[in-house]
Image (tube, rainbow over all chains, first blue to last red; front, side, top):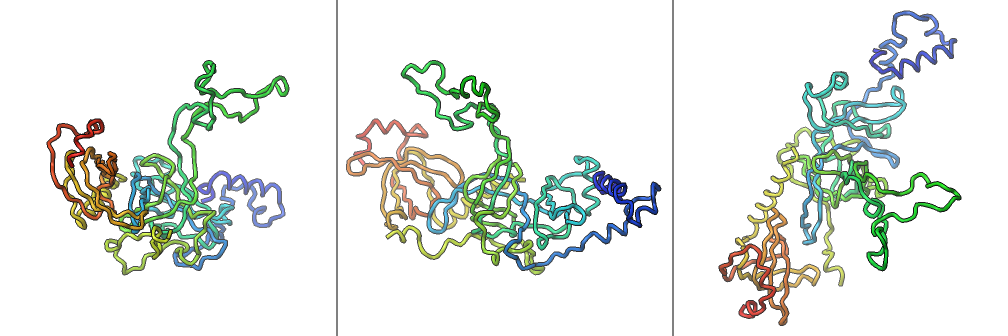
Length: 310
Length: 114
């Protein structure tokens, strides 16, 4: 059990054993073949979590969700205005691991998305899923949460975790653009197209001063590989949610290409009303049929925005 | 898989088609529309012209209409499945041998007959 917890835990225990030799329980064992920490110690430290609704405090942090970017389209809202939307598919999210302060020095939930066959996963990865008692997932991501938002492993998180009308932050790896010049990569303005500018219409120009400092500063914006990095788009408005198919329509662009995984969290800057968010996540009532649910659209108000301009 | 994206598009198109009657508009049709413009205090205006282009993109299928407005030739782009288009009536269908009739931009006398 101690070995399966990871090398870092075991080394930490060995170091603390050598430093504080006045701890009575450990000094008796010395260098025996028995494990340093028994199952009893781990059971004492592991917490029991329940999956039930909790009142959300003002400092609470819910989990995020992993989705797949399906594509973009444009819809008409009920007042006839055009809304450009990205479609995100929250594919079968399950809590795969819970990290608490006692065992892992942080409170976080590891969420898994998608499906994967055992023959396509490495044996340590399969062992991780088997140890937690959770189906095999394609993508894992850890979301730091507050203590009151912890959920037991195996809890499924659907798209109803989010409410239409709220703002979210969407993180993903953006599209790779290859090797790009200064104008596209950094927004430089280049040089004039005529008036004698010779062979330098799109160049970056000067890179520094003269022999003081006599070097080019680190971080000087220059051409290079653009894209393929993690980017977060903030304050994305959730327009529509389809609980039957676990789809989410958000307004505007989302980083990444179609088919990529995106990570969705509650917005940090435009926090919604704590009363309207399901906390720690949405638990479907047992008598609700998922097949009968209609898509939920954000509330756009009763006043026609076009007529109100009078 | 995320290929259900195409199914979403088809379903949205069928939903709009079941609510409103949308005829098949091809380039060369003379068409009369009743359009509600939300920016213009929701006035319903009648627009009549010849369809010179049609672009198929599922729910975002658009068509270009060329008409004479106060003696000036004007081209407008309309989404076919927009909720702002209240009614589409096909008045006439001309025989054309092109999908995009951009040559009509140089032939002003063709419009004057409409």
